[in-house]
Figure (cartoon, one colour):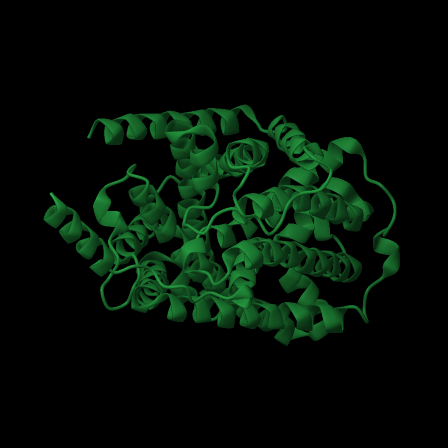
Length: 435
């Protein structure tokens, strides 16, 4: 018996494990990459159409609401050093079934995001050479993006993290150029910095903006590969929200202040860029969009496999997904499976249905994390935590109320799609549990 125990311990010690290689900058880059994606290139027209000249205030309101949710992620994340993010928090707080459903919905949003970004990448490449955006060219563009970034994420977490870092900086450069030049051309009469929008318009815009601010939670997933995650994750999340809020407000001011008819323009940044940068403006924004979509997918290509790995580590997905490559120290099976799934969804999935699922899924796993905070405080009173929310339960309760309020703005189609996704998750849960 003792020999058997010794052999088990030796095998466990010899098994390759993930390595900690992501620092504070890397976690912040993952969070920023998750927030600033392809959506920012169309967001200003959506917000302007819903709240008119009060759009800067709508961004501030959405940022405050998002910060409350991010703060809950920060406290929950400061209690753990394992991979999983909202899936891990919900599993530890509410048990296996709720944890699985939360992780399942989170996984669906990553797949939906990967599909949307892959298609946007192909569309923006088509700006430079139209055949790349349609037919076999679109297939080739999407395949190239998925394969290259999967290969980088297979080669090691250092390479994956450095790629995210580099693309985060690269995607910000065109946006900063757009802001720094455009501020000199804005007509301040086209927006109001202080005026409050009507409540109906604010709820509609708030829903769009909450989704636009979403993605910061990506940084909570690869905790097992982060250095000092208890200390760095809360800081990374709050920095990401602050940085993106400033960028979003300035981009909205420039776009709305330089472009007439922004509310009906489908490409507001490109159109505004042409107004004050000339013909080169559209090309600069297109380059920014290519870099932005590449960066966003690089973060999803890093984060998506880790949620599969966390499922397998928790015994709720096939154990093969938790295998770690002996040389590269990456969850190589999970990386390959996620890449294949993302590629298939991008090319053949019912994208409209998945977008509806993504909308409700984001609010559900955000609300679950906020609810998990007081439960984890009670269940894990002695757990070390580097960040604790002030004012007792006030912030988690407010964050849950906000999530529920936004859910009431969902259409019937969104609700049906979300319910169908939850039902599919429940079926998978009981299949895997029985297995």
